[in-house]
Image (cartoon, rainbow, N blue to C red; front, side, top):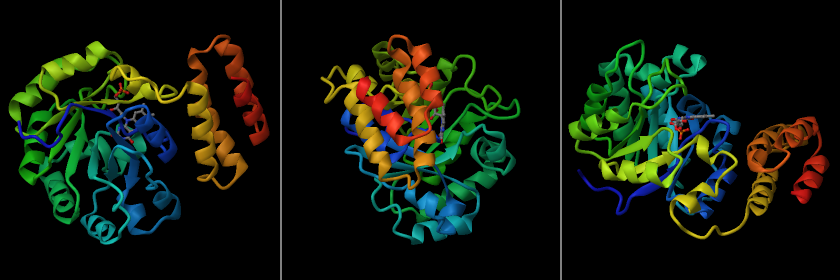
Length: 303
Ligand SMILES: Cc1cc2nc3c(=O)[nH]c(=O)nc-3n(C[C@H](O)[C@H](O)[C@H](O)COP(=O)(O)O)c2cc1C
């Protein structure tokens, strides 16, 4: 296997609506070796969309990866003519999103439908990006599990590493990941492979390492639980959950410009953060009723 990382990588997976710049920074503080942004629309970058550009803010002390999606070569060329990706070390391309509105538009996991057409898009990314390009994908779509053929195409295009979420588009996030698929993939490509899917414990990490993965990505298990990175790496956490919540909230105050959007967004994170505390059900009901910053601040103080 070609080496690109000098150690086994425990990364924060890309998650739309979750891996905002503040959360990425906090996960890096807790030991994530690499963090990935939410999926970013190439079209929106081409159009210099203000909200999308804001999503590129990056302050994490870790390997910084920006995930893009789109299918228009002109957008790719234009996007990389900007300096918007300068703060990132890597560019990842989303070929796995199962959401109907994304797939209907020919993006995300729809990229696995026509490998030759996707070859042109990935080749353009490799050509125009000044950073190494990786691709994240699933087992397949529409009942066709073509992940090996798809991965080989990515490798031929000059992609530096791959991330497999071993479920089909139709599975969404349900059922079990196909553990054997990671083994098959590693056997069939020379570039490094990340495992994404259901990693929660040290044993999960050890298994991925033992079969030859170059790293793991942690998704849902990190929601409200950035401490998982310290736990998985057997390191002392730099601070406690309350401090993580306060830091997340304070940083987001510099990101959202209206009280309403900040409160609505942060309530979602707060519900994940409090999952493990006692009286969680009562607490959740209370959180759902908050409408002001003051209410959130008072609540966070009591944690
Ligand atoms: C809320 C949510 C948003 C996600 N958004 C993205 C995304 O923007 N890009 C992507 O490649 N995967 C996305 N994923 C998939 C995760 O990166 C990961 O592959 C998947 O959740 C399986 O890993 P897990 O079991 O560790 O969560 C998302 C998953 C969730 C739960």
